[in-house]
Image (tube, rainbow, N blue to C red; front, side, top):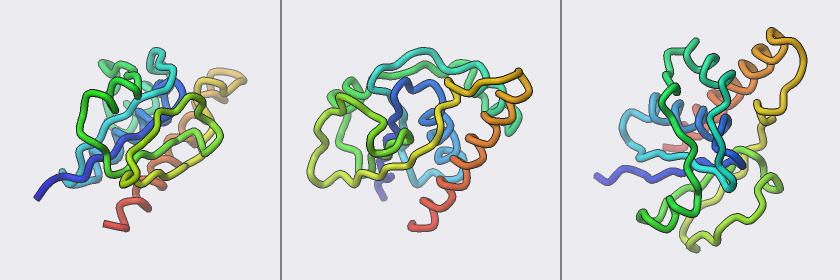
Amino acid sequence: MDRIRVLFICCHNSGRSQIAEAFLARFGQNRFEVHSAGTDPTAVEPLVVQVMNEVDCDLRDKTATNVRDLLRDNAPYQYVITTAGPNGLHDMPTLPAETVRLDWAFPDPEYVTGSLEQRLAATRAIRDDIRTQVIRFLHDF
């Protein structure tokens, strides 16, 4: 049986989409081929690496990927899920008609403010909310 192809997208591929990719890969029981990308990729956010390490997900060697490269160089994805919400992405490439697009809106860990402890707490909350949404997504399969 072919695995279901899922692509998570956010603006920079520096946090939310990386978290979602890691959780779907972990909880998906090998039923999914999962990737993440950004419309304007940058480096993975260090706080995201730290809070994901707390739940045994190592993102230290992850790099940000450009969504155009993934869509151009790979077979179509059955699901494309934006983690920045429906209005959070600019310049999104056109998707094939058969692709299911879902919009999940999470705050961007890159923009959390406050002391280090406050930023870690906010990033942990984002991580946990994304994990919950990924688990909800899995209930449909």
